[in-house]
Length: 239
Image (tube, rainbow, N blue to C red):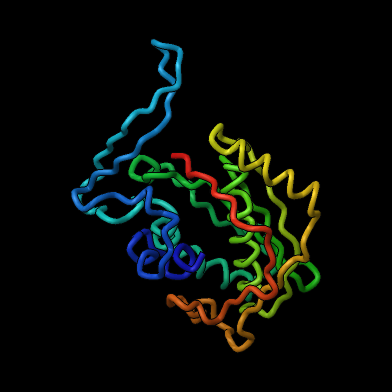
């Protein structure tokens, strides 16, 4: 979230320098080409077949994900405008950040899945409603919810508010066929082990400016306390 909303970057190398590899599959190479292996339906054979996809974005987009996410935030200065409105006009009913901009979809490797968020201030609390057009439930959903919950807490802190609630709407929620075994294991654990205590999010209380949260590899101003789990379940990324 710091990559998207603070650094407002679309450069994958920024993440790689911090040992974050989650966007590697969507990185445009040094020649401006994005390559991916996708399982696509072939109407001629009636079967799903592995297909190599190539798309030329141009060298000016090398090592980025094209005109998506942080690129859009930076172009329209969305974070700055949202924070300014929360502070100075908290009753505004137009506090919206939308990452879906038609002019820039053709040059985005992955048009935003979580594409919009609406914000409001009620009774001294900052609330958010997130809209997601496409949702990889096993892998993407917990990741995205954690992202925006953290962002909500950060923005609440720097605007002098308390974190409120998140509402979430999903248009297309799906489980890929190569994730079924992992989901079955997750359900088995829930049945046999039950829920574990939720961890706590710690934010450095001295930070009063969103753009001053440490975005180094150590991310010193953000900690997850008492995180417990039952072991990693590896879900493959689907492109």
